[in-house]
Image (cartoon, rainbow, N blue to C red):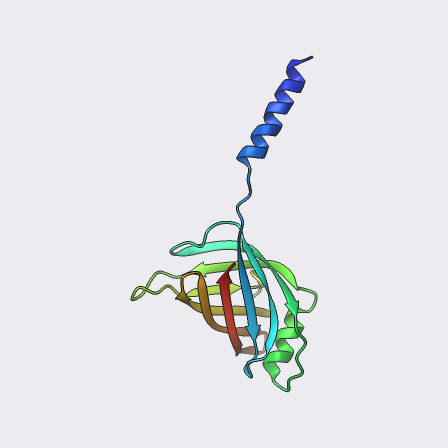
Length: 150
């Protein structure tokens, strides 16, 4: 009878030490074409950013409701409506001229009704670029995008 509780304790302790979950957190910001911040938040990755390849994570956004006549602002809010948190896939391309471009897919698995951002590193731990949206009727560039390691 004593062997079972001792074994259970050993398994629990091994899981506590050996199963530490990886987390790397980045700040993220979306702006419209006029430079107004539409949303800011975080991206928590499940692994380190690769030199080239894919890493998955979770995003969490806080919307800043900006009045704008621009279609990109309207579509941004429509696509993220009810999706202020979710999955993100960050793909780092093979380096060209020493620089690796990145693609951020905020609605993986959807070819339409999606927000995609493209960014290049500006400093260590910081990327800047542009976001765009894809709809069934077509896509369009939306505004600026920035990611920085916290």
